[in-house]
Length: 313
Image (tube, rainbow, N blue to C red; front, top):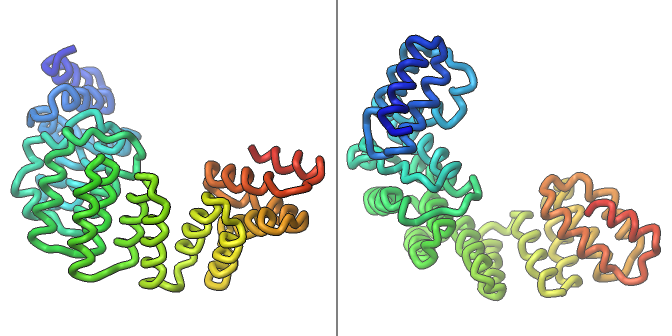
């Protein structure tokens, strides 16, 4: 179906077919076909205003596109950018920021926090990003940072740049942020980028710097412990998690990691048993499986303990 067909169906379903939700979906389909056209957005806004109670479409693709455009019309540039960013993260194969309303006026009204929120929304979906389709976003990042450089938000924007494959630009933005004020988050973002590149030494150096800036941050101890474990230094990993527990003794992932690394470092069956009691509370399935893998390599485990550990895989 063509964009004209989508728009025609949107009008028919909304006004004659008694299904404004379906009308919104067809209008959203028209945006997908031609992200640079204003007419589909105008129709989305028209349907929403005529039929404000459209149920689930408030949170779907059509709902987010409508929210973005209406926020832009209302002059709420942060909300407009963030809503469009969620759509971008969900469907990065479409150049959503080609929308005619994603213009210089929007960027001029975009705050550093709004741009940071939008950058995280794009990256958080975890989808592979196409840098060419994100060019307007890159221009917005540069404009906002040039106008009002806020180190914490610059670090958040650098995360999106890394996910988009703009590694050099991500490092450069972190450098600019550090030149204003060194922050823990900036060192963490830089470290995560080094980790993405497979440079464990540089990653560890960045996390250690982050810990200097925020010595009470338990998650940094866990990050460093995980790096040590990846290098088969389980004694170091156990020591680092123990230090983290001094700051946050009730954190489930930290407690489980401490038990797993202690079991691996010492060969303690009791530490392995403790890990088994804690593993279920680790919410991130992938991380839990990594810890199980480390713990299962504990020397001289009984058949029963091995079976109990493998049940988590």
